[in-house]
Length: 370
Image (cartoon, rainbow, N blue to C red; front, top):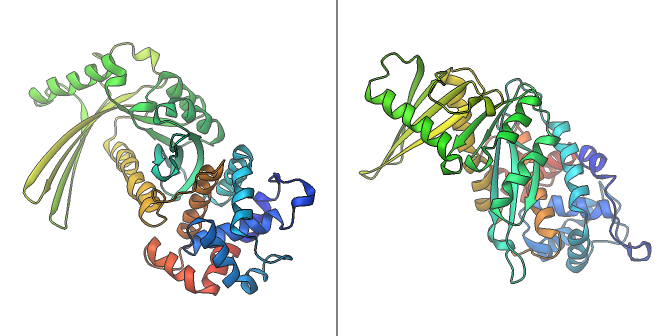
């Protein structure tokens, strides 16, 4: 895989002038990826990892002048082009992603709280998560959550959507986004909230009235799921229908074919919480693909965001200089993808990362495919 990483990042432009290039740019990139995979946090930790593993690193890269200092690492990473790095990342991720028919791509944002400083908002990264591949396919950085609306079309432009179902929270429930997805050969399942006031109310009213009449005269598909464990019982009920007669201006939503509702009832230690959410979809009114799309979108919290915070301690990371927060978030996505691509080693991501910390052979297998 290192050939793959080196190949895909070889075109990245070095931000330094020639006389300051004591250390090769690709050496620095490889060092940061290997250090991050092995549990190093911050520039000093990456430098320490490099000094401990210099002999090992030199099996794969020259490191002619040894390991760069943490100041040098910080200087280089903070000045890399975000656009250039994202293009290299996209090239790598799409090269290793398995082509899966009907892939569900969940688009969602996460704020890196540790990147906040006196003079800048915390980094908010919008990511496209391939649920089957367990891989970030693309991302766009913003400085505020509200900017997701402008970030999402940029991500969609970079993705191959044909045959895929795209799921987006209410922030991305926009007519232009729906059209962009269908024009690219994909389908959508878009969550509704108050930002689509009349549409949200119309879908909510439809299901409220249909439910009160026990769905008499309404053709729909239904599924109930119950999960139990650790003192928690969660019931999820899904309804989807192609009845759009009471929905206003459906012609404004390209490809709109069905509407859905999901009810979640959760019991934790005797306390009950309930939630109902509503959706517009371009998929047929079949409950199994609808339920799967909704489940997978909820799963991005555990499979991507939770692991970034708990395993990679992203929210606690204080890297803030220049473009470093964005570049390092992308590097964590690369590391997570490398771990998830390893299907020969059992165990959680945390277990794999511990193994990569102390096992040189395993680390070489992950990063360099050896």
